Length: 357
Image (cartoon, rainbow, N blue to C red; front, side):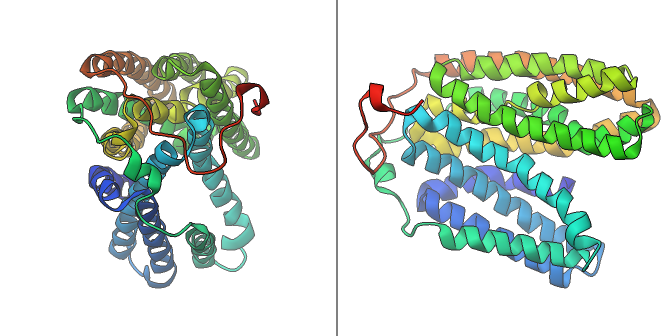
């Protein structure tokens, strides 16, 4: 997993430049095609650990291209009033994919073999690839205002905040079950607790997308508040007693890992003409956090204890919230957010009273 996310971190900024050059749709198609190649290579040719790591590196870069391309597509093709829900749906696909991966273990891996699980994943990706519309640079992208200067310093601060937040949130999926068992929760219930937390994360990301669309501003503030509340959940996890642990697992998941859609929306909202390159910078931090976070948590849990690791995770979430607010302020000072491009291609917008909520 460290190799996968490490490759994604290295390729994120490059994927942003590639997407700006060839268009969001072509960037997404490139990423999905790379994912198919990675999955099929793992299924058919991964005969050693070095080979597996090499294929996962390809998959990591492909993942970065998919993330950045979809961010740019949402920014250029989805109405501003619906972008919160669009980003929420995109970010909810991650816990949903994790849920599918978990279900694939008993359904496929333990019946016909783990390689066929990767073949099934490639089949799903192929459906996505052939479902994409044709074309390269979209009309909305051509007609958008010329991009301004990329505010690297504020984006770098936000990348640090995103990385710390990802390090904290990623610990839930990586270590919740092992920590729950260590706290005295039976293994079957620990697995159900992780599944419940994943579902709550998915629902929270969708709900916060709707809230963001209705609110229309303050997306960084909402994400920072969620991270701060998530630290309370991580503290409850450190209590190492079954009752508080279960409550902490849900609270930490809902608030401590429900913010990424808001974060991406806030970055894009600053200047939609820079959506690909800007999120390429911030996603680099998120990917690095996904690499370093589990390694650090596991080391602390092994050499100290799970409660100590969760307490440190709570502190990391609080620091991430503070740095995110600093980055927000610096980004505002770098320039007032430019108006969004014209409406996406399609039917004329309905009057406000006729729109679905």
